Image (tube, rainbow, N blue to C red; front, top):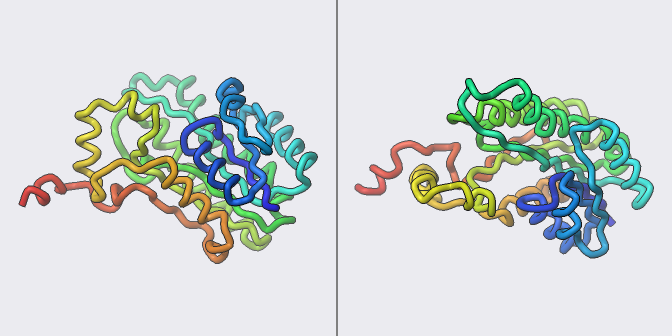
Length: 247
C-alpha cells in the first residue's frame, strides 16, 4: 500500500488531497502545525502529526514517525504554506522570514528528510507553489518570491533525484474557492478574477487535489521537473478578456 505524506493537511487543498488519496487506498499522513484543526480533520485509519515544517528537528521527527509506523514513503506532497500580503515598505524582515521559513525552507527540509525513503520506493514529490510564483502581482513580494523559489527548487530536485527514480513536480494553483479566499475576497475582487480567467471562475480544492494525485500516480511515470498551472488559463492570458467577451 502506498504511503503519502501531505503537509498543511488540516484544511483546504491539503485536506482535499488527503481525502482523495485515502479514497484511492493510500495510507495518508496528515501533517500540520495547527493541532486543533488537525485533530478535527484527521482521517480515520490515517496518521495525523502535529509538526512545524519550518523546524528541522520536527521534520526529522515526522519522517522517523512515518517510517516507524509504515516502513516506507511513496509520495511527499509539500503543500504547507503561509501567505502574508502587504506593500513592500510594510514587509519587515521578520515577515519575510516567516514566509520563507515555511514556504521555501519547509519544502526543502521535508524533501531532504524524505529522500532516502523515496529512493527505496522510487517515489514522487509534488510541491505546491502558486500562480504568484509565475507572474508578479501587488502586495506579495515575499509570498510571490517564495513560490518562485519553490518552482526552481522543484527543477533542482528533479534534476538531481531523477537518477534514483524519484519524480519531482510542481502545481501552481490559480484562484481557488477556499473558505479563506471567500472570506477575504470582495465581490469586486471576485469579478476581477473572473474577468481575467479564461474559464471565468475560481477553481475548487478538489480540482487541485486531482492534479496532485495525477502527478503522484503511475499515469505520470515519465513526468518530472514540470510546473503545472492549475489556474483556469489565468497564467496563459488574463488580459483583454472582458472587452473581447463584450464583442
